[in-house]
Image (cartoon, rainbow, N blue to C red):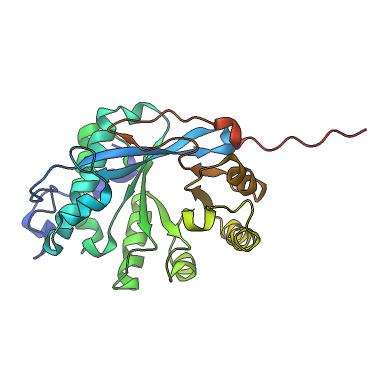
Length: 277
């Protein structure tokens, strides 16, 4: 286990769980099995190297995330969040992701975290059990997720930052709190929503908005991920804005219980300058 994480791993006690969290410590109590698919995030500035594999929840037979969420009752939110984290790490361990240089990106539900230190214990134990370095974990929170208490989300991010995790805002531009989240949270990555990406190569308003977000993130020292890339033209437009991290069907569809091998990496190369003379 990474040295900066060692002191975070607390012994199991009854105080590790809250009143609504009877099954969340080990991710049990859902009544059905979870599986994971993985989709790579590529670093264009490193020749298309896989920066991270994002874990995407699936049903046991590959059912989509919508099917899975429909199976979770409101009182199962804590258990579901924990189960997803543990399943992502265990599946990554089975696929030997730790033997590569890639990180593991996990989506989490801030409303299911009543105490950052207590609720991270099952995650850390799964990492310890599988030999996955916690310092290579990325935690994503979606801008689409309604945040009941912004100050609580800030406390989660501050705690996770102290633990050494990489932090990301997902679906940026899809909700109503994007700029406020970017201003208030200590984030490392912003993942642009695919609604902004789609057709950006021919849509001037999208280009202006994307360029402005990218410039703001650059000033803040935040890396930008363009997700949902489907065409080489979209990719080239975003590369021209200085975006260096990409994810989407152009490169790889999510692999069910597998780590996809990226394709179309050549699309990440900057366009050659026109010949002169």
